[in-house]
Length: 433
Ligand SMILES: Nc1ncnc2c1ncn2[C@@H]1O[C@H](COP(=O)(O)OP(=O)(O)OP(=O)(O)O)[C@@H](O)[C@H]1O
Ligand SMILES: [Mg+2]
Image (cartoon, rainbow, N blue to C red; front, side, top):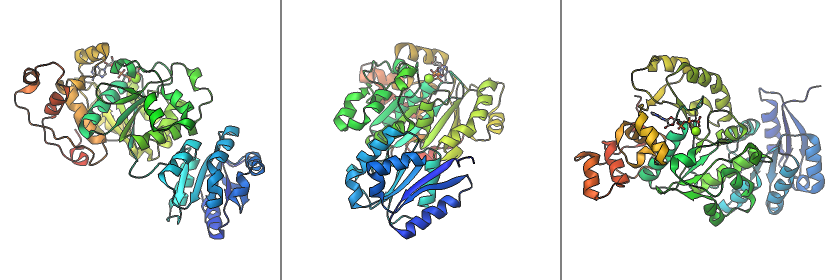
């Protein structure tokens, strides 16, 4: 007989919780079965128990942990995940401290449900685990927003948007912002930012188990805007042995340390991009007004939505290189995609190519329509309430700002002035264009 796709192992000494888990599993619409059931999580975490777990071929394990298991849980999970990377670990227990959660996250735990378990949380956690998603985060206060950027076809402008929005987020929120290039190879974000990083994203993933705040900072490259940056791995071989769980856990760690994390997911659903999607709060899909980009977007949307915790609702569409002189209208694009278009970014060939060649994103000089549109997009994607800088009304334009400041690099003043409208809450500015 064919094995059900979702095979659960569970361990709890609480009969009510046991019954709730069994009910949640058997009532799922997808083929699911409980393949191992025990009343002691501690026993399952011992070497014999772990062996039994691996043999059961469970791909989701739900463990109700008490004080006894707390001490051994992180090391047991590390051991388990070293033997099989195909298993998602969901824990239930008394509310944990931030330090405990950080440790569990590093060990590769996918989810942590504090007890008493709220209505619907168990079903939600099971659903996320079966979709390969990671939820655990250090604390609600330390939970930064993860924004992915994806292009359904090469060259739509994803990396340019990511770099510019990262810089603008840093300026407008004054929070720590991280940008990571998750293109499997040949990522170009470091060129667009004009930086020469020492370590890449995958090196961080591989060293996650020994990461503390100081080590984390030493892996990052600081851009002159204040944005922290991690480039893509150089070759696909660098990705060997890097599991989705560890990538998820790494982004969860970054989320706990940064106000906003931007992931350049590139233009295809590589394992790296899919793992990144699994932890995004929102994904900005950058399309261009061309049939190939729209056709690919339409084909990829269901898969992108499937990997995203918030599903297709968490997608935002932006049309790049839109200058009104195009064959396809915004209405046609919306109908093709089945999604509203949040906004357009203008075509600016000369400024874009100069910015890429000198490694200085246009938003740093804050002039032009593209930079202005980036400000608008930044306000749309920022965590509501996180924007602290007020835009000032222009008095004489960007050129005069240079004279007043006496130097060319008056980036932030020009940037603010270029927005041309008073600061508002992000929701209020998220009008459709
Ligand atoms: N609005 C724009 N107007 C004109 N040129 C643009 C615009 N946006 C991006 N470009 C240019 O298009 C090229 C591709 O941009 P970018 O590298 O950001 O795309 P991408 O989607 O990340 O590409 P890839 O698929 O290779 O990762 C760059 O030369 C960039 O300067
Ligand atoms: Mg790119």
